[in-house]
Length: 168
Image (cartoon, rainbow, N blue to C red; front, side, top):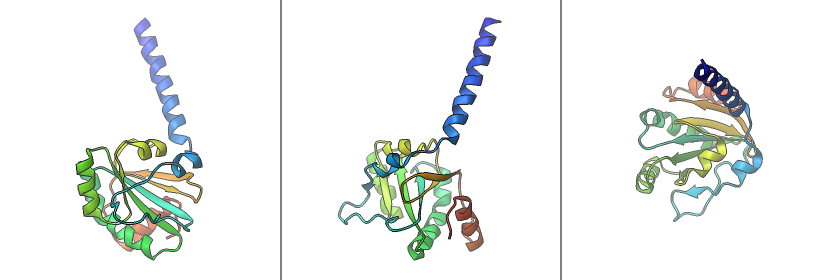
C-alpha cells in the first residue's frame, strides 16, 4: 500500500513538472547567447534570420528516419525562407558523433549548424527529433511543433508556417 501511494505521488509530480516544462517559454537570453557552430567554417557566418521578424529552427539527427523523411520539406522551406523578407531558417543537426554531423551538414548545405555538445538543443528545450520551433527577433520561442513534415505542397508549407506563428 505504501509503495502504491509513493508511485501515485511520483506520477502526479512528474505530470505537474512535465506540464510546467512543456508550457514554459525559453527566454531571449537562452537562444541568443548560444554559440552557433556553423557547419562550413570556410565561409563567413551570415545569420539566416538576421533582419527577419521570425526564425524557424528545425532540429534533426542523422540517424532519425522521420528527419530523413522531412528533408524534402526542409529543402522546400529553405527556398521559401531565402525568398522571404519575414522569416529565416536554421537547420540544427545534433545527437551523433562529429563526423556523422558534418557529413549530414554537407548533404543539407547552407544554413546548417552543428550541435555537437547539445547546447542549442538544451537551450531550446528540445527533447526529440525532428523538432520545429519559431522565435522572434529577441530569440524568444513563440511556438513548437514535433514530428515529420512530408507534404511539400505550397498549401501544406503555408499551413505549417501559420501553426508556427510565422507569416509565409
